[in-house]
Structure formats: C-alpha cells, structure tokens
Length: 455
Image 1 (spheres, rainbow, N blue to C red):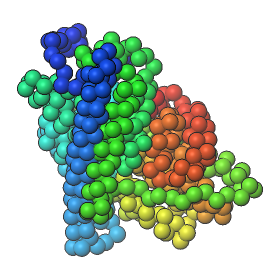
Image 2 (cartoon, one colour; image 1 turned 30 degrees about the vertical axis):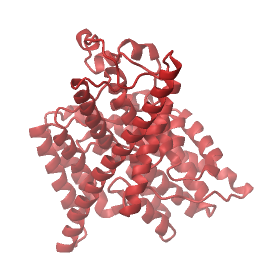
Image 3 (tube, rainbow, N blue to C red; image 1 turned 180 degrees about the vertical axis):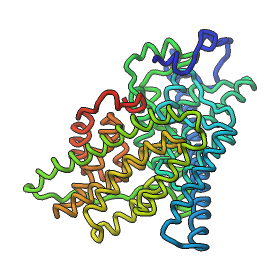
Image 4 (cartoon, one colour; image 1 turned 120 degrees about the vertical axis):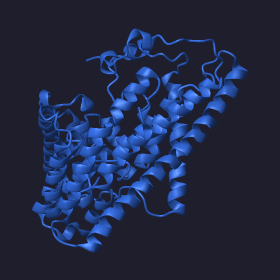
C-alpha cells in the first residue's frame, strides 16, 4: 500500500490552495545573498526556540506520567502489599484502556507513521488532543511494557501543527514547523541531540525508497534541501535537549537510561561476540513473531474492544507478578539491573530479556499503545547481563553487543540504532556497537513476520 492510499490522500487534499503568501521565514536556498543570510539566522534561531519549547512540553508531560504512576503503584502497595498486586493493577489498567477506547477511540500513531504523515501531508493532528494525552498516559501509568516516545512525539507535533495553522490564519507562514518539531521531540524524549539530528533526514525512521513519491504528494509550497533540513533539525534538537537538561537539573529525577562505562575486553574473549549476537537476534525474532502473531489475533478480535486490553493486562500482570522487571518501559528498571545483576540467576536475566521482547508487541497490538524502543533496549541490557554472568567476561562488552543486536534485528536500521545506543554507551564503544548493528540488521527475519513499521 502506497503512502497516498495509506493516509487516504486524495487529489483534492494534495492539491491544496496555494495562495501567494510571503513566508515569515524563507528558504536558505534564496538567490539573494543578503536575504539568504538574514533568513538563515532567523530560521536557526526559530528552530532553537521551538526546540526549547518542545523540550519543556515533553518534559512536563512525562513528569506528569511519573507522578501518576507513583500515585497508582505506591499508594496501592502501601494499602495492600501482596504478591499478585501487579495482576490486579494491570487488569484494572486493561479495563480502563478498553473502556476508553470503546467510547472515545484510540488512534495513537507510531513515530514511523507520524514522520510519514508529516512528510506527506505537511502536518500531523489528532482529532482530539486531550483524548490523545489520556490515551498516551493510561498504558504508561498502569505498567505497560511500552515506551513513551510514540505518544509524546504525536502530542508535540500535533501542538505545533495547531500553532502553525493558527499562524497561517493570522497571515504568518512558518515553513516546515511540524517537521522541525519531530526532530526536537525525539531529541528530548530520548535524551540526546544525536537522534534528533539524524531522525528528521529522510530514510532514518522510515525507509525513503522513493523520494519522488514524497515530493509528488507534498502539498507544501516551500521545501528545503536535505542539507538545510539537517541544519534546522540540529538546531531544534539542541534547543530541546537544552531544555531537558535545564529542567532535569532544577527538578532532579526523570526519564533516562543508565550510562554504561567503556569496554575493557581481553583478546581471548572476543569470540563471545557470537553468543551475544545470537541471543540478541533471538530477542529480535521473538519481537517480530509477536508482532505478526498478535497483530493477526488482534484483527480476529477487532470487535472485542474492551476484551483485548484486558487480556493483555492479565498476561502482563501475571508475568509482572513473577518477574516485576518486565513491567513498564524499562528505563528505571535498567538502573535496577545495573545495580543488582550479579546477585541474580542467569536464567532469570535471560528470561526477563526474552519475555520483554514478546510482551511489548502484545501490548502494542492489544490496545496498550506506545513505543518499542525503550523496552527493547532494556531487553538487550538484561540479555547482556545474563551472558556476562554466565561467561565471566566484561559485562559492558556483553551488554553492548546484545543491546545493539536486539534493537538492530527489530528496527533493521543500523544508523538509527547506533544513534539510539549513544543514550547508554560511550563513543569509545562505537566499533563494537557498529559491528553488532550491521550484522544483526542483516540477519534474516521471515518476511511475513515483518511489520511495515519495521521494514
């Protein structure tokens, strides 16, 4: 299915009324040198400011989710602390998600879909932003094995699309505002400007196999070269990352993955890269199989709007009661693993990683909508510590390879995965990370298992 069919873009939508408007900020490609210099500075400054605002919005929404999560889980365990409490909370969460979806709908999109819609239509907007915020919060606060990146990106780009439309009505035209905010949003969500710098350039979050297709169906009057886009994406990414760092320094505690130390490896231990790659690849296979199987099952149960998230809640709650670390997106639990992995059993660490790889597609397809990046990174970390405990070699080497292999076999985009891994690993590990990303992304996955979101 092409983009035009996927997003239901008819000729009337694509051939929008192009009135002669002078944009507030014009392209850097202007032929007039003076105008070009002024425009360049204005665009970069605007991108920085918008990035900062996006960072504040993302930080605020995520902090709200943390407060609500603590309220539900800490209050519940304070009142009645017993073994199967996660099952009760997750089932209640499934009921809430199901009822909300039944009466109000739930059309949260993945980051891949958001980027494609913005590139194709020039904007992204939910029918009801307030409902989108609730749809984002429910699976997060009830312990879903999903990440916050998809919901937060959609909410932020929606806000900026509405701002862009309001400015247009006032006679002020800002070019590529929704696209710029995608870069800012992912930078603040993932906590690094690197991913924002590369995410906005075609072919990173999605495969831009036919650039002419995007240009043909692009209704925007003013467009940028890729080099110019990269400058703006970088500016917005740095602005949002700066806001994130500033707010975290003022209000400590928040989202973020642990930072691992450099690899210290003996030459004789290099062969352990093979089992690390294999276990990460198995995690990727489990994820793709789960995506395929649960997607088909979800289609068969499409009329059971409430039942599907309840089923997911039951499974999530049972496994979460036995292995609590499989709950939530995995950011906070990664710190727990870092501090306690040596006191855990190898089989437990491997089980946590593999179960996480199957739980996330279950949640995503059964109504607990969100992202998959953070849970899959956590799965790779757990698998790495399991191999390290079994082998006795440098844990940083094992964790680096398994995390890269798990995420690369799922996402199938080595550049994107490498950028994401700098969330956790130092630049000195780039060679090993790069090798693992290239190998794992090239390993075969049955074609029928691969969703269009990961192809």
